[in-house]
Length: 308
Image 1 (cartoon, one colour):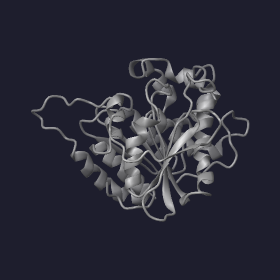
Image 2 (cartoon, rainbow, N blue to C red; image 1 turned 180 degrees about the horizontal axis):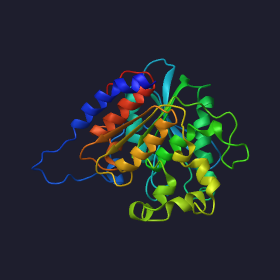
Image 3 (tube, rainbow, N blue to C red; image 1 turned 90 degrees about the horizontal axis):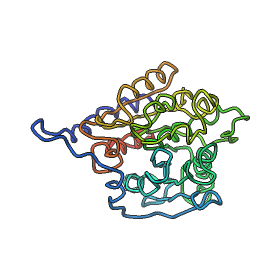
């Protein structure tokens, strides 16, 4: 897939140029989660449960046509904390990917403040949601050989982790046998190093998000960080693309570069796309240069053309 990623790089960078602001302009207003939540969505899709809890569900959107369709598992962020974001925050992106010819499975999951969330429930929910794609394929025209995880912020951590589950030890609390194989990962403003982010979490999330979702500090439960923090799961074993705004404080370029360097050294195919003048949440809006870069990256990893 590395040649596909190289081929799409120029297209992604061209899209990023759309967001460049005039040097005489004031600093741009960055989007907030509520701005993304307010974006229009053409279709809500079909709500389908993947487990018995009221939060164990996803919205399946199918493109026009007969299929079978490639699939994007879309995972919202929000610091693993329910007041910050929910499935609606990822709906505009899921809807846009559907319009681009991709079936989207936009998943909800329990966060650390929900009963049963945190460790290991949050991670097991997302794993179960991903594996449920195979069940969905028995009733809907889905191509389970072409599945990409695309996640935002905390959802990007969860998406990257999904790619590595086959290497988990059976004794792990987040182990599941025969996990769904991914074709790639697209991380949007992703938290790829949970130990590193733990030192910045109060300036970004405003709360002790990392130790809350994992159930302890790195010094207390190091094995849990090894099981779910993407940088400690490298290599992911599939191509991955990282898209973030240049003004993103949650996923700054230097942290992503450190992750990518380690991933490349271990054999992964990686691309980083930094979008000028955008912040952490702008990449979730399909009409922005960040949103278009995200769509192009998903299409490339699924073997489709690189148009936005």
